[in-house]
Amino acid sequence: MSKQRLKTGVAVGAAALAIVGFGAPMLAKAADHLDAPGKLQSPLGRHDADINDVYAFPAGNDDTVLAMTTHPALGVVTTQTAYATDVLYKINVADAKNKVESFVLKFGGVRNDGTQKYTVTLNKDGRNKQLGSGVTGQNVSLGGDQRVFAGPRSDPFFFDLDAFNNTIHATGGRSFCANGQGVDFFAGLNTNAIVLKLNNDAVGTKVNIWGSTVSTNGKTQYDRMGRPAINTVFNGFKEVFNSGVDADKDTFNAVRNPLNDPTTHNGLFTKNVITVLQEFSSLSGTPYTNKEASDLAKVLLPDRLPYDTSDHMTNGVFNGRALTDDVIDTELNVVTKGAVPSDCVAAHTDYLSAFPFLGVPHP
Image (cartoon, rainbow, N blue to C red; front, side):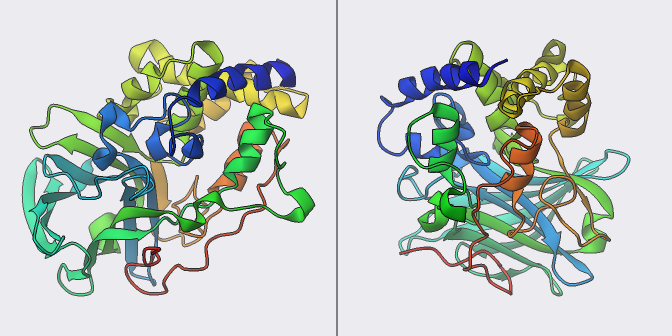
């Protein structure tokens, strides 16, 4: 498939997006913000249930940090900045036998001072155990050196969105790494964040992690995410190439157990990964073969973030994800078959060395 077909196919989708309005086109490709790139709406229209990113990284030798950001472009796109009272915010951890435990936050209404109370519950083996409770914006103890934080932070994600738009949409703008530099579009944006610092024995050793947002009555799963950009790239761009419809992204978000990703809906998501890998790798001049793309699909699905708590060498895709891991460079290399090796954007400089690790919100 030619580079011209790639640019033409995506440009059709880009033109349609121009009518969406301020805010949406800005996030045309992010880790999972707005489940981009198609109609650029939060899953089922719920900004307050929209997951941006999921992180898992070490905090010393004996502790692990699990974090999930929500509410894309807080205060700009997401103008309702509070956590929803009818949504459960879950960070899920599956062990080697695929037994799942979930750390679940449930929020109360906004109080006069703008804060919200919340509870943290561990769901394991079908039982719920309350681990603690807190107030947004504060570091809260869960016993010992374990901690939880929920509230606004600076968005830790970094990416040269404008260069990406030029490369894929042929906008005539700046190319990747122009003059050896990139421009981080997300540097000034905020997000809501849930951050857990847990003892390793509470997490496990070789685990798989994903975030999800589910209605409190359990009937609706709004969003879910493991590795960065799986849904946004492989389901989102497949739809742009073919019809400009975003149905596959919503279907993907509704799958409760990621283990079903490769085969559910007659292998739809596996087919999407293969289609998009072959489209984007055409930028290299030698697109992935069916076997190469199929083998990569087996690695990328199920959509869970693998993490070995005994191995502190995170990389953002294949073992955990630290705030500084350059997931964009890793994924650009994989998806374009090396044609675009980097966006020349470095990690942010406002990360904290202590809990909750994400930078303070921008003014």
